Length: 65
Image 1 (cartoon, rainbow, N blue to C red):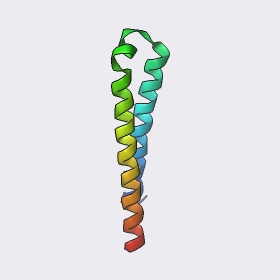
Image 2: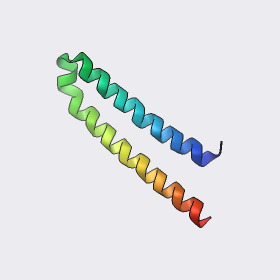
Image 3: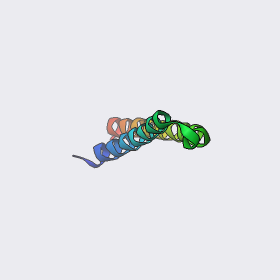
């Protein structure tokens, strides 16, 4: 596995963990979900955007290098 595949895998794993955290939180419900659901969603959106940026940069580096 090359370093760029490892970076992409790590990015996707982080997004998956945050998504799982949000789904579990919503499934349980309660006060924790009410107070943290928006924050967890923001984390997911931010890290998803970062993972997409990493993907685009890695594709650009492969194409130009």
